[in-house]
Length: 161
Image (cartoon, rainbow, N blue to C red; front, side, top):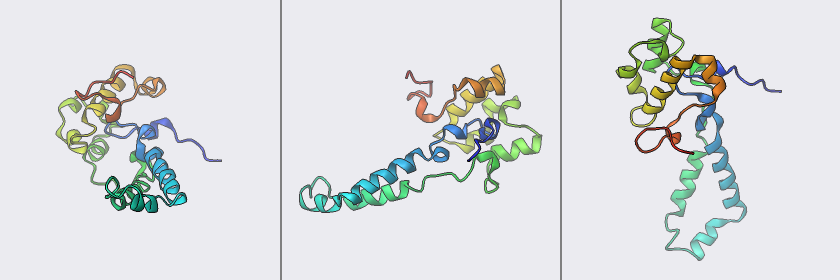
């Protein structure tokens, strides 16, 4: 029986929560594996080549992309990965003795933090770090109100689910 990791270890230094991450959970990789298996089971390549040649002219590219997506898995939470030695947020927190960036008064304007997720998780990290600072880490972990870029709207604000 696999023991669930401590929720605290799933908080990355930058404010992302690995427990919600598509790489850590494997949700994309699992879906891609199922899709790949269905394509193989029904030999869809034959259908693509015989019936929908124009519409599925790029079928081989699709199969290649799906194959790539089956490998989109993180082997462990960011905090526990020894191979994340170049993460500027992690290194800064360790140097300063912080559990995560929320303990730093400069996280909202920090270039080291911004550099970690340029164009993808910046807003989510900031929202998470602000919430942790406001209500405390344990309350934040229990609340389940965490943000990732896919939970935000085009302006970087929490989406309306």
